[in-house]
Image (cartoon, rainbow, N blue to C red; front, side, top):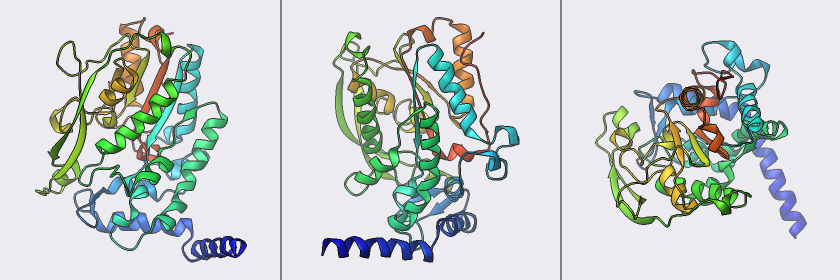
Length: 340
């Protein structure tokens, strides 16, 4: 009976693939984005909104290699392939005895395809994971440590809402899952026990937000999120980034959302704050609004030029950014981490 079930399931997915091969699914998703996007947003089911640009990215057949110039939206073809820039960045850090953890945040539609307009299942959309798997496998062969969030978020998608409905970022639950995975990795390092620890205070609160996607379509829709707000017991205020921290959080607005306020909703409850409380010490942070691919590394270079001792304090750089930047218009330049 067990053998029969295995054969049946295998035959089912083979038939599924033949009916709706990966390239066709990708083309469908890209077509959906181009035909349904209003003001850059695709309206899904049950109040879910999706960034049009992210759906176009999701339909890409691959994310590295010589043909990326025909796939990426990068203005200059020589910067279309992300692989050389990521490997170069990792190698530069290694020469300074700094570890890199590369954390691409997967498209929301890859985790919640059932919320897209139409009839998309997690099984069908799972075919679109292969370009990510291929890139991550190649990066690991090149010595880059990659934290793949697709299995983690896929595991908890039904029990914890890991993305915001009306915003392009992960939710409080999603960033907490990421912080937990990162803290488990970092607590195994040889340098971690020697770092002085502080027991920060945290309290979960419900907040109501109007997400960036809702604002793009001028919708009044709001959503309620549970967030863990973190405070420093010595000051009673939010944790402040520490330039002397052994851990640098680098990337796009995923490093800033729920942490810096303003158009990013609130303060003291983002990935920076949650990971700081998990580790027991404040992180350093370089976050940019917009692309976290090249601009974030330029900001690191600028800071290290002003403060030559900056990198000497670092043990780990966590590079967290939206996976859609793999095919983004900003491109992937090789940037020095410090002045030679």
